Image 1 (cartoon, rainbow, N blue to C red):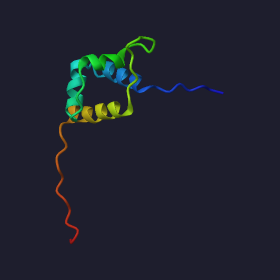
Image 2: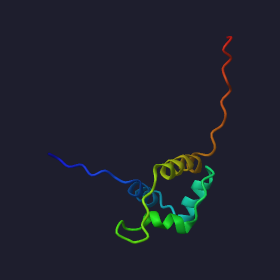
Image 3: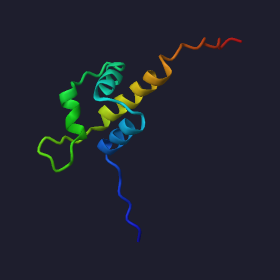
Image 4: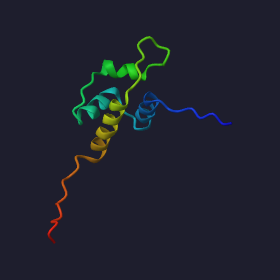
Length: 88
């Protein structure tokens, strides 16, 4: 049987940071776009090796906020679409 290793949230953000050439300050800025405040020091704990004493596993909420902020960072704020009138 084939064993499938799942990626942790830490692995996902590490790979995105490298692929998109983001610095820690960029990630702090991206999270701020969705009103999620984090310091560069707090963020560095997510990028450490799992056996490091200061390693911290990244929760789903932080990754979700990062991905939502990344959309705004790359595309800009979503414009409101005109609402369709239900009476028509």
